[in-house]
Image (cartoon, rainbow, N blue to C red):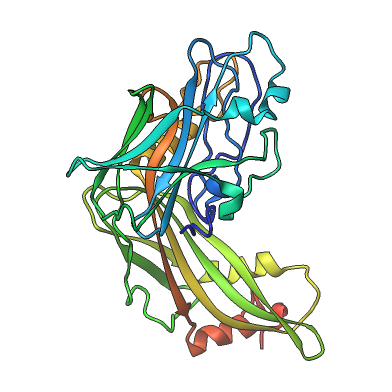
Amino acid sequence: MIALTQWINQVCCLNRSRLVHGQASLRMIIVFGTLALLSGCTNDIDLEAPGEEVPVVYGLLSARDTAHYLRIERAFRTQGGDAETLAQQAGTLYFTDITVLLENQQTGQQFPLQRVDGAEEGYPRQDGPFAQAPNYLYKITDEVINFSGGELVRLLIERNNDVFATAQTTILSPLEPSLNSPFSPINMAYERQVRFAWGHGLNVGIFQVQLIVQIREEISAGQWEDRRLTWMLDEALLPDNDVTRSSITVLGEQFYRFLANTLAGEPPVRRQFMGMALEVIAGGSELAEARQIDQANAGLTAAQFIPEYSNISGGVGVFSSRAQLQRTALRLNGPSLDSLREGQLTQDLNFQ
């Protein structure tokens, strides 16, 4: 991941932007499943901040990435300027005099990051209030720094030979599939509880769990088209304390009801079930805390104090880790395929 499915199928996406005056602030909606953090989510920050310039940092590290990117920008004060106009001025969004380093806390070794244009790396910035070009990111490859699960990594942003801002996170260990939970082909009987399980390290803070259902549809005589349906099982599953194995359980009936609700009302075409894939995306404890605060803010009014999450000392933003698991080629057993074709919830969907 550079795939949380090119994150975003990936994890910390800031998908709103507020252009207001006042304190520099950060509010997040955590989305697991895509790295839009890199491919173009806009930063949900105030453009104007009193006092000194404030670095705004977003970055998720993964032990399985071949390249790692951080977004580092700045909040600023304009004495009542037009925030929307300033947002389109790249010169106001980026620092030109900072050095960005990652430090392995166990060894003390430091690794400098290179500033690159995300558009040239395959990550153009999406349309929005902020200047699209250039789309500066800070990059380092796994040939330079090779992360391992459990390592404590510190981010250092230096300016004029002084530490400007810092943060740290623990690298998540890779997720491991549990090949017998469930055993494939799956018995997805209506009344049966089906358990999906996986292994992980102790530092995971939150999971997103989904099933990708793969079908084929005959869109015209003899012409078939592949289609993927995403069944979100839980977008914010919290692991139990001090465990290295997590799971989620669904009732077989829920599977057929998902298909019925998703495909209802579509033209009567012939369909084939091709298989499923379990996707689990894990985020570090920082992302779990950010989501918890965001959920606590729900319902608060503008007149109330709204707490905001940041783990950047000397700045605002989120610096964390992520991991991803995809278990593919999950099939249904014979009786479950019969239920798909003839069951009361899906018999009108014309599965063959």
